[in-house]
Image (cartoon, rainbow, N blue to C red; front, top):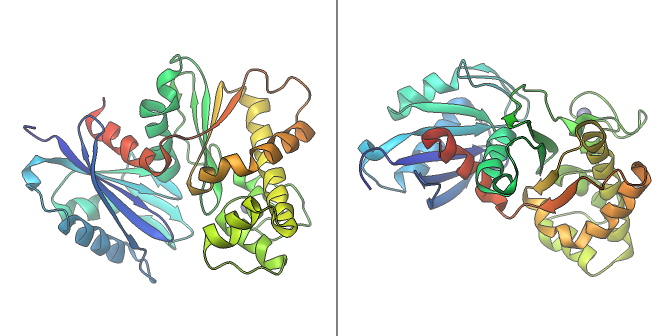
Length: 303
Ligand SMILES: [Zn+2]
């Protein structure tokens, strides 16, 4: 390699902060992660990133820049995090703070859109004609979708917030202030609550939420049916409005897609009229947690 052909890409979440060293062709050379600090001030998050970078010693002169994928409302053009409810941030000039801290160009992007960019350029988007429309539905702590319409990644911060479609006005309170949102039952947080209500508190997500489904325990099947119904409600809105060629299900929970796929088809059949899915393929992401890193590489090197 010669010149500036390396980059750092960080995915800053409410639970973990993940960092990768990427190459200019989208190679993921190293990755590491750390828990998000209990008091996640912007300075504390930059401290964590600095220590993760320090564990991957390289010649800084070869680094093109640092991409920060941040949840919430991110104004990439002005380098500001306008609002991040999970981290408790409002109007944080993170691009400038990062640039001063690392002495590198810093690019901010909303985490879901960074994910979608990776999926578009290196995942399912690669097989699509540029004019086609696709949705990358990221199921993590909550759920939101990144949208590519007519060969453009939609940048508006509120686009694709299907997690906050209300299914039931008298339902469970949501972090957004409304009730019965899709996100109250879809995503790690919603699933944990559903398990708790069923009398099965969660310590390990895999052991306590996914394995009981694989073993077809009746309470777990019920929990996942509620999840599938919520997901189908959110997806049907996307499908009816956009008619995407492909809906990609991404994020950690999509890793267990095969175990709840049949429930999802059943729930979609309840939401959509017959034939509505004829033009849309629903698949699980093959990139998994690599998608944001690949999106970041694309932002830095544009390949
Ligand atoms: Zn909500």
